[in-house]
Length: 392
Picture 1: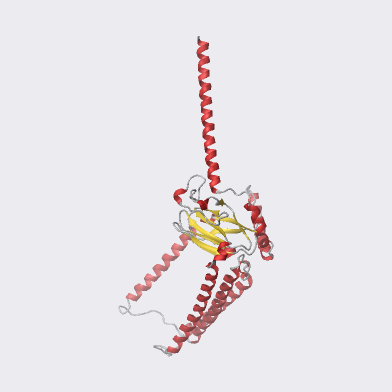
Picture 2: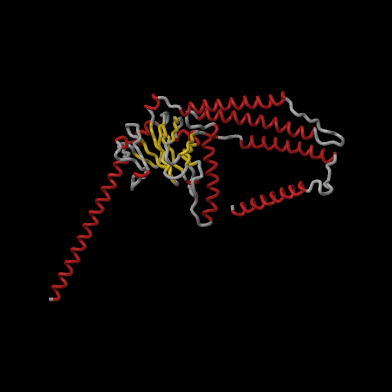
């Protein structure tokens, strides 16, 4: 990586020196005789054909990429109810970009050839053309307005949660810190208790206000479990720097900003088990494991441990570069059936209970340490008494 960066710097310095040389030549215009070569008709003709060749290269590369890399499992395997709408908007945008790129590149290279320089030929100069300017201004404006309105419509449907859905939703806090995630669930009251970084102490690493009545049934987990078909309302906080909660399969992303609470909501539509059974995902996992198996042969040959087989899991990632271990900031997401989720909820220990248990354990440790100290002191005194008795 260091060698690559040095190479980039050298290339950029060369480009900068080249540009400075061109600027110097421009400053010498009128001061000396211009002896720079003039392009001939043959030069212009060759350049025109080269433009056509480059156009063919662009089209062939595009066709090759579409045939070999045009299958995107993530574009068809959304795991949330709003996911297909986001995918549809993405596909419309990609098709429009491909269409416009194809037409504009063809026109650009064709005109570069057709109107190449010729001896004695002068370009016809238009100061302005109202019709052309109207066409190339209005058409993009209409297309972009349509995309923006569609995007706003989709975003409103995703972010708007009516009162009926909110009353029946599961409220979960995603707490970001360098470099890990932790989830806090609202209990039966479906209201998260107050929290503040000033309350962080010991096992209360989320800074929950233990005196808040709404916090009495909150519980935390290092693995995010959510039920299929149930609306989930995420409340997001950050302890240190700007993070971004990114759940690619659910088409969900929201920044986690220190000092404020952000929110996102969606309904999971595919369980983890169902996603693992999809043909596209089975093929993807098989390809990954084939690569890992091949890599493991080299590792074992060098006396290292072989790689474990890959198993698909939904993941919560950080999509902001938040520090040195940003790449490893992730949390496993498990989408359960409603029955599995209810079973998982059993025996969940609340944060208040965890803090109380930790305090009891600390107190018991202090008592045990005190008793041990007293016992050692008593034995030490007894030994002294015996020694003195023997001396007499």
